[in-house]
Image (cartoon, rainbow, N blue to C red):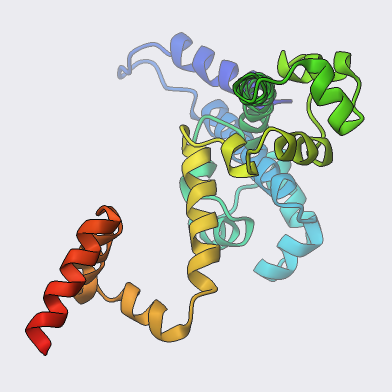
Length: 249
């Protein structure tokens, strides 16, 4: 039984339940059974998503694999402390076990998003290539002659009809005088994350004393001053340097 079936049964049980009265008892047994199965589905979902086996979870909690399996089938239910340990081990929030969504459904949504992202990015990368080629005054045939890639293939790349293999993008980018950063995603959260990782790579490669200086909040003013100086015209910088030299002489 999947999560949707269990949720539907729980909803029906709620809808069918009449207001409490002295003469009519609520069917608690069915409600508990449905909730147990819901927890079981979510537990199995989290375990499968984490790539863990029944034995792994059983060893963690010092129970038998059969006990964990009975939880997943809803025949029995773990305690809150047991679920807390499982949440830590399976890398999910503990509230996952009393939530309404499975990891599997989230993965399916993510897969759809990935496909849409890939198609959009192929079109954007192709449009950037076309713009760079036209800015260079190159025709498709010119670029084809320089790279050995057929004109029709380049045209398909530029229209976003075909994903551009990385090694060919590198060659094409070189011919239109662009580095690969020109084609990188920069506007979405993914682009921001990639940019941060690139920046961290260069930061990590700096000498240790420079990293310590840049990492100190006390030195923010000095770094802001350096940024302003980097944006000044060369003549202005030269003039400032001469003035400082005259002061110190």
